[in-house]
Structure formats: C-alpha cells, structure tokens
Length: 89
Image (cartoon, rainbow, N blue to C red; front, side, top):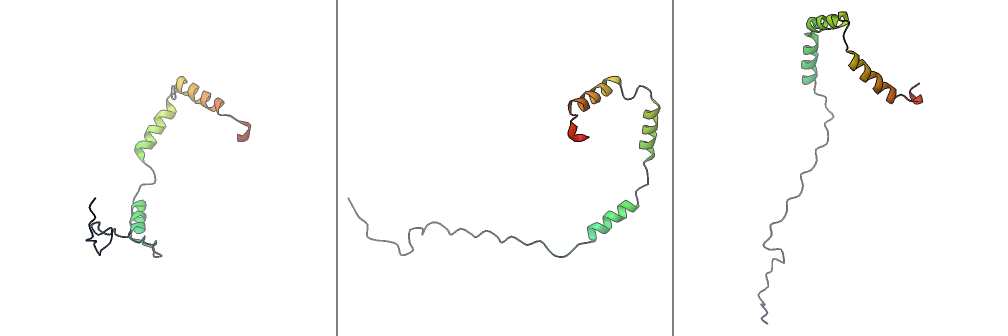
C-alpha cells in the first residue's frame, strides 16, 4: 500500500467549482403601471355596443322552431336531473 503525503492545501473540493448562490427573488413593485390599463380602456371604448353578426345569428336561432334539437334538449334535461340535489334549492 502506498500513501501519498502531498496533500493539497485547497481542501477536498479543490477541483469542484463553487456553486453560485440562487438569485435573490425580486419583491413585487409597489408602483402601479397604467400603460397597459389605459391601452385596454382605449380598446374597450372603441368596441361596438353589440355585434350585429351575433345578434343576427341569435335572432335566426330563436325563430327556428327546431333549435335546439330534441336530442340536445334531452341531454340537457338528463344532465340537470342527474345533478339535481336538495342543496341547490
């Protein structure tokens, strides 16, 4: 058995680079940015009060006596009946 007496003065982990500490988490800012809020408000102001294409489609569906179909109505009724509980009253 051979013992090497040339011990390094840098310690056991001399060849392993030191790990970097995790970056500090930034705290949320106490400042309010209104840039996005004012752009959103401007977009909302430019929207029409209603969408004529959607109103037209709804009007035609209401006038259609076969809408919704009896199978759709049956599915909705079955779902409601299965999920009905006295807690909802």
